[in-house]
Length: 399
Image 1 (tube, helix red, strand yellow):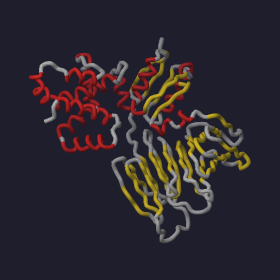
Image 2: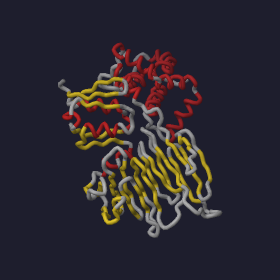
Image 3: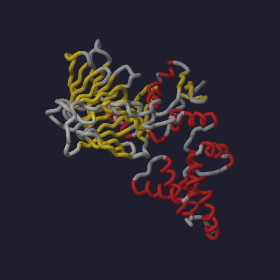
Image 4: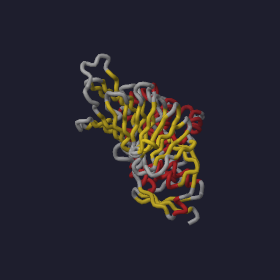
């Protein structure tokens, strides 16, 4: 039987587990406990159940729990009536753990988390964040974080572990393929995937993206295509085989470097940002439009009739998605909600254009969730929100 201190420590671990903040030994410890302890597994499932959480929220006015529950744990540890510790330890497994976690969730769903906001929060979670891998023949594999696999093709081994897909060239290739076999990787809303190509090039693929690439490069160039979406590249250097990225609007050529390409089909511009090395790029249908970027620069391609524009980039903001962060620096409210829509399934209605164009600054980890981000915006006392099903209406704070 765990004592009260052990249950408090377990509560902390479960909180981090719920927020996907555990790694290595701690994550393995919780995974093992949930497999071996059926009562704990039931409690964990209850905490993740929206009806359970809704009941906890409805009880909020009737309980007095310090939101800083680490402070609360110290109060419990210092409890004067030592004779009651054994009794408390017995009930901790069924009351203390879920109560502390529910208390944390309740107090972190500030401000004013009412039933309509609860329903909104429950409805906007994407139905599926699974990544699809499509072979050239059209076969579709669903890449779930819980399903690992390894397959061998003519010239490479393909291995998927969690959200990492790796292509590794075989040491001895029986027969060099006559043509490149193309695979397509598609990430869903709220999903992302890490890809290592057969030449060792690393690609981080953002939410709602589609990228095509050969399983094995053949010829004098290494070419991939971003059909839509965003990807961050760390290209393996090979002077004799330039690396080419094609988008709807442009062509990017590199030897070995790090850069980010944003080419969503619902955005006007394709944006290439150079982190390290050098790249050249041009309009897709104009070979004479080539420009070169230096590290820290960003190029925006709109269409062949508009000259490619080069800016100094805010690198921190550009690569924030790769670090699982949202960073906004004087972004309009419309742009902020547009970015959030890559991760959550909702509709937004702005009361007027003035509200749509209000600008905000801030940095928050993606794991905080949309409700907390909305809470931060509300605390500025510049806007307020109303909710109905999957729709959020943004209004002026004074109205």
